[in-house]
Length: 280
Image 1 (tube, rainbow, N blue to C red):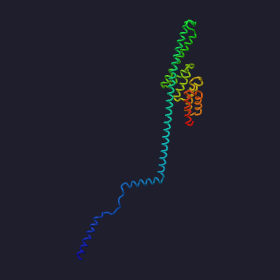
Image 2 (cartoon, rainbow, N blue to C red):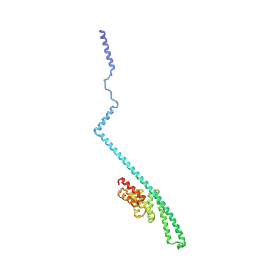
Image 3 (cartoon, rainbow, N blue to C red):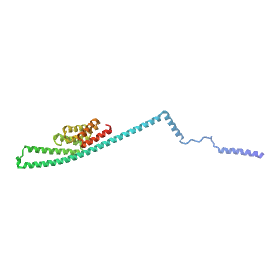
Image 4 (cartoon, one colour):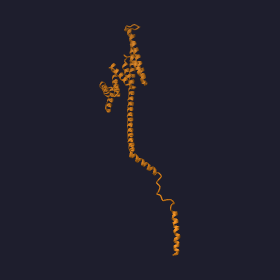
């Protein structure tokens, strides 16, 4: 009994010492939060404040407005690209039309030159015949004919020179050349063509008022010219560019009515159909 009590007195202090060594020296604390917990809490708190005062809603609305503006701008760009492509197409059609007409005029000019040469040869043979009863020096009629032939040749050369300038794409110089031709050879057989090509030079450079006046002169001064349907067609084109829809429709319809089998009438009909599709 005495030995058991002594054993308890020794074991108690040893157990207490062991427990003291096993426990941490400081006070017991809860587990530490993660390192980014504070940053996350701060963000959540900031978002809550933004929602509470409406700032976030305003930012979302502003973003929607910006997206709508971007869509509108994209639509405008697409519209401008379409309009530019249409302008390029009209320009290509114009160049093809000009080239086709120039080739036709060149062929006609060569044929006319051959005819003039044949006529000159025949006149020369007739004047040398003994039964004509004319002197070797020639009368006034011969002098007048010679002057007329010279004027025709000069007019033809001046006209071909102006056409050459136009074919080279020198529109300002071509306009001056055709104006000079019309002023010098107003009674020439080429005058109506020159007046028409003067209008074309202004049309290509988008000088619509000058072009309109030039084409109208073709109609008023040369009403029997083969260029009248083409001049009316270009008048309709100009009025279309100026957005004068009623007048443009009237001019184009007149081309179809006056020259139904011509190329100008086909082009006028195409433009009328286009105006209908566009709602004009």
